[in-house]
Image (cartoon, rainbow over all chains, first blue to last red):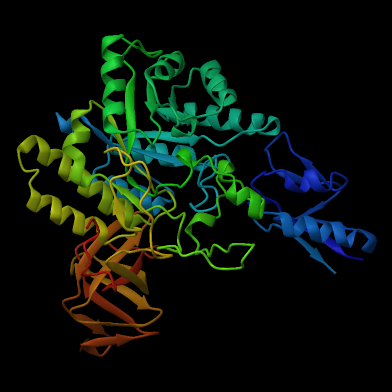
Length: 74
Length: 420
């Protein structure tokens, strides 16, 4: 299954991921950064296995991130 | 008195902070986390760094201001509240703010505010409005000196006082990058890359080369300069006496995204020039020398901005710096032998020879520039040292493992006049 990876420390809280795909992303009111819904924290990364059916939107979100902190691993 | 004007230095890293201190800055400004206008280009200070920066400034009796001047959204409230609280606890002197939510929170916490240039304050009535919240206002960068002077005189005539009860002070930009958009309010970067300039993430579309094509005829339009949106840098060294006469209190140097040697050189030169105005040494000869010194560090060519009434910007004709010198990284600091006054470095790339001019930059060391007189390796003195070797050179300052050594070499712009 593909994996969504978020390098959260470098997120600048621009909101574009949440605007595009609110199923997977929320804006944290604690620190103003995006949060990967259901993601598991491993060191500095937040990781979530997702359905291949979501690939298109996840790749679009990753490309839209202005600081490239979202990756989709096949 | 020109020397009453304070020089406000940009600090985007601990190296720049050390350089600003060394150069004699009266005050510094810095940003933390993602709520400042250089979130992509400056080194990333965090909330935890606020106290460290403040302590270092206190040691040198330098005022410190924290920029919190991006557009903010509802979900940012907790973060900016936390930043303001941490700043107050650390003894930061003021928050530079533009959003009303941030201004309100500062007021609630009793934290002094400076109104950012992002609010585009351009007239006396706006100054009066913001005087309810702030003792210092950074004016819009597009005003003429006559307009600036009308505002400073208006403050005295109308007795416009801030929350402290003192007359409101005025700050203007003195040196550094200018933007094609009014005081930074630009949508280009967000439009092309979802990367909002107003959240500090400008990707600088304006600094690129463009071709204009007529879609009907498919002909390229003839334009003098392909960098049609890239403004030259503001440089006011030529008109500093006129600026001093306007009655402003603070002259800001732009450049939190620039390197420590830029911070050192610009602060040093403007401090020297302000003192020279009082001492009768603000001469054409000195101005020419300062201009040359400013041109040694990063710049896109210079003009005097909108201060003398020019309506359009002067556009840059290259995509990078027009600095007359560039620095090439050579070596990492290893240790210092204080009795011998000798520093050991490890050469990691290129080569170094006797007679080269070198620059050392470090977070504690700051900036040290000197000419290499002798080089020693294990086998004794050499004229030249190559990659991979440790070497020692006589050095005037204490060198640390966090220091980096660069060789200074002239660029193609070395003989050009930066302010033709």
